[in-house]
Length: 166
Image (cartoon, rainbow, N blue to C red; front, side):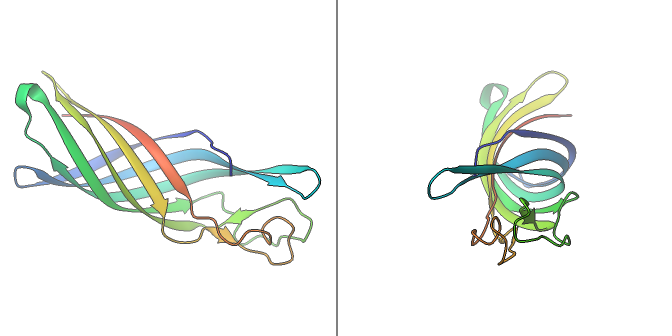
């Protein structure tokens, strides 16, 4: 796999539990590519591009520090469900067709941290998060040159989130 950038947008709903804890659910539309670069024994092989438009719902628990000088730090962890609208899971894939299909639904666990800044009219937060696939996302076709040579694909996502909230 090759590193690829993507983007997305969405909204959040949060429930504060006590002074330091918060449960948060986001709804996001993610747009990203996944590239798989193949290398055959004697020469470089093709690069298979997998385009994804995903609807994600992460559910996280957040622990925040006190906010002296209107600045604070937080850590979070949770789970994420992702539904890929461009999945080729149901497509019939031939042995030599250069296509690798991913499943429609993928589940992740995620963790991260960030900073919050309280301003006059808005709270701004910057969040760094890593999401690791729990389930195998590969639709394996044993006779295919491309998906048959892979045993599994467990997606890994790194995200930087900028959030403005009132």
